[in-house]
Image (cartoon, rainbow, N blue to C red; front, side, top):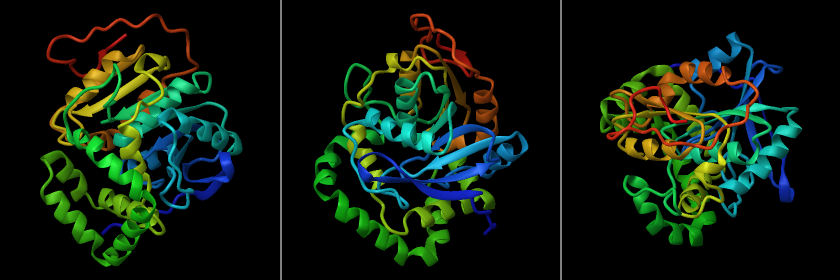
Length: 321
């Protein structure tokens, strides 16, 4: 397995209610900031090696954040997805970050969109990679694996904390076999994800993130499932900052149609289908994602949204504003 360099800096920051959020930094310390929100599951090191290299070459500062209950972030269940942005604002202030872009992979997508809704004066743009769509409210859509979340949420609400530590203990036990487990998982995935996970440096990044994040607890993905089944605390129409959305058209976990649906409701969005790719497809175009987001400068006023999605969904790079 390929070796992977440690982050340039890691630590934790005090946020609200005497809690802490842990983070990892890649790139250059004074570069333009990009907040990277990991998937479900995932942690602060779930940043592709191509993105890390791009940050060094183009003077960017990528900050991966552990959500509550993973790494050394204090376990906590937010009232809703929007509530997390209060912690994000405190963390950014403490790290000396004024304005920034936000990228969210899969389960990190709702958190990235929430940042755009709550902090429009600080967020220049949002990138979503195969993001989760709401299960409740006027923006909701049915189908996909997220369909089972409402059935699991009541059980997870009652067992979240002990299950978090049990999962961490289980991962520690199988740690020597982690590479083989990832290989076995990849063998049953669609072609796109299988090819990504077969790349030594990509597999090494995933293993490093999984093992590092699960050293003490694995509560963040459990909290994610609970929050995804609640009202998010904001609607798509509240996200007036520019959003650029990438989604594999063969995604077997978060259906491509979910991305089409939610992007069509955003006031300022461009949707890109990644042909032939499945759930991890957005990770494979990390350089393109960063290049695109860095072109989004200080935000201008956005006109009232008008849907422009043709029947059958948009083609790659279809503007939705």
